[in-house]
Image (tube, rainbow, N blue to C red; front, side):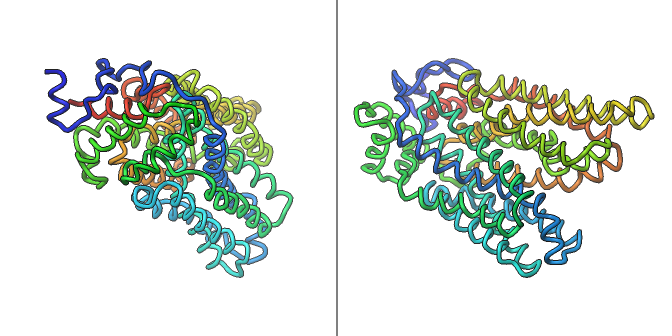
Length: 480
């Protein structure tokens, strides 16, 4: 009887499901007996894809170093420049409404190309801007571009890579984002804001050019019925001498079964069988943002100044420490696993926020005033390292792994919309919260980080070393 229920529900009954054990499934089994080695095409395709992540970092880091130059050259008021900085989020929210559907309808490769057309147009509008209107249009186009690419890049990488290195390669998304952010920040102290915008165009053009030489995702090809292209692409990605018949059969059977079950409509996503995947994807994004991520990214200068510490030293230190911390995350993702890194990261963030709140509390009481600046600096550095180690990139890695192909588009839109909208809420309210109570603000962040540890321990499965089809099928059965 154990095999009849899945058939009645229209779920696959192939070996990938029969290998499951109660709970999260068999973590050691896979779609094939041995994992293929990494091919040069997989590496090159990943490098091309993460050019989009680099663009995201450049766009996110642009407004800070360009602020004084733009305001002086174009005569912008503080309010006008604040609009310019924040309109990036509006573009991201707009993109979140359509990025999943675009990725499903047009394919992963073409969607990345369209996102870079938006980003290139945005950078050029900023570079040639003569007034605030052109600046805002350019920033909005940048937001749309990175709002699309922030979803499609991890999805594409997860779908082309073997399971043994999928986590590390997908985590490169966050690593290149950090590199782009840091590079544009430091170059902004050397070159003018117009030259900086032209520099932002370079990775856009590189990705557009590189897309002509990389394959489409094999899982998308089988979803749209391009059988010949699917097998040829999978063979190229795995290597000419590798037997792909087992992997190809399992991917095909899984995709066809779930495609029969429901289409990629937003309402289909709320079926009971997808509840666990949805809770994981949306939950991690909400906790990431409400744990203070963008509050520190956008308002670190204000926090340092509140503690009477040099904002320039503080923000540059943040930009520097994030790169090696994110590189370490890439190395550890497939060695340690997603769950331990998420919990260690959240614990470090929570402890940092708690001590940060305590230091401001002591400052308000006029105690330890001499120690407060150093304490705040150390706490923010620890927070940056802890965040980069797990919570920065792993929610995107897990998001790209847990949703079945038939609902991945609508799920991607919902998850990225949750991320962008929560980002806007935090970035908009943080200054008001800081004025209300600095200790209270950071204590709230600490509590949310603690909640993230519990959420990860109770609900997030370990996805390390598991084939996408095995993982997604076990999650779809979770509530049955």
